[in-house]
Length: 85
Image 1 (cartoon, helix red, strand yellow):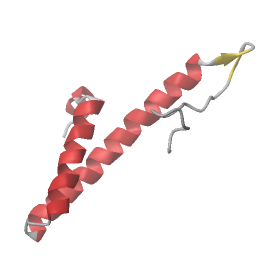
Image 2 (spheres, rainbow, N blue to C red):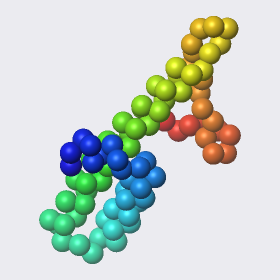
Image 3 (cartoon, rainbow, N blue to C red):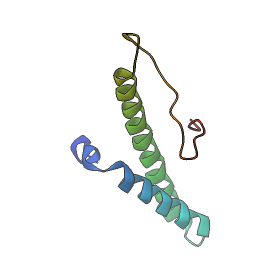
């Protein structure tokens, strides 16, 4: 995939695709070659998602100020807990 196409993929769409890949692999009814291709796609998708999350984290760090100095704040997860990563 070209970089331009990768940038156009929305985070949520990529996450949904990853969920679909995992679901298909968990069924275990595909031959090895198809499973490997899906696995490779999944690994690539995880890397793109991770990169997008890291970019978002850097943006958030730049926006958070404490007494005029920038600082990092841990973001809460959906249930108020710290994010798992």
